[in-house]
Amino acid sequence: MAKKTINDFTQMVEKGEKIVYLTAYDYLTAKMQEKAGVDMILVGDSLGMVSLGYDTTFPVTMDDMVRHCQAVRRGAPNTFIVGDMPYMSYQKSDEEAVANAGRLVKEALVDCIKLEGGGEMIASRVRAIQQAGILVMGHIGLTPQFMGQIGGYKAQGRSAAAAMKIVDQARVIEEAGAFSILVEGVPPAVGKAITEKAGIPILGIGAGSYTHGQLLIYADMVGMYDNFTPKFVKKYANVGEVLVKAFEEYTREVRQGQFPIDTEHAYKMNDEEVKEFLT
Ligand code: KIV
Ligand code: NA
Image (tube, rainbow, N blue to C red):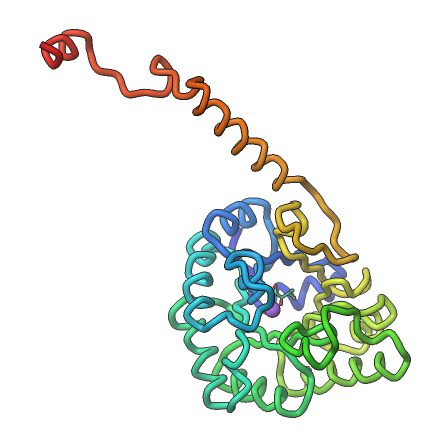
């Protein structure tokens, strides 16, 4: 299948077809997701937690993002890829935001970048990056790079006032020229209100069933990341268990001399060569 473009996503929204979105951080996973036919892949800065073992996304660097976006691009050459902007890669100035967004496009060939926040400063960054010809996805609601201010990894917009504020952030980011917005960690009523008001594709993660598309962190939905599982995750497999079982079995067989078996798992050498070699 050909890689989807902004026009395909607009059409999908018009026809009421859901946009399927998953994170990936490496070549192998991206390859399997392209094979499965997902519409969009996010190389999220959740990379920091899922693949690099940090407790938060804060330590993730532009170099980390470029390297992993490149790997995902190689695994999924025909899938629309969104590259996440890590903490402090866009906060300082419009100029620096454009330069760093440009790196993800130029060095990793992503199709779109994503950045967090819904205030005036972020709107200015969205405008600047968009004017450089790059598609921008906004990200509002539960925004991990604002962890300190929102008091941890907690659902947002649960009071009427807070919900209204998030709906307004969506308007600000859309007006700044975002191509799409990801809404994270809000009740379904908030996801629904944003989706109904918007003129662009609204994607949700933990934002209910009304958004134009759904995102999950792949390591959560296949049962690989067990440090913490948010309420909105559905587990489609227990890959973590499968892997640990395989590693345990291998460990046991090597220790007991059951692996390898030379008639099955070894290179052949004809008997005459062996004889000559040994004499
Ligand atoms: O980094 C990421 O994977 C994300 C999603 C959790 C929304 O931004
Ligand atoms: Na992120």
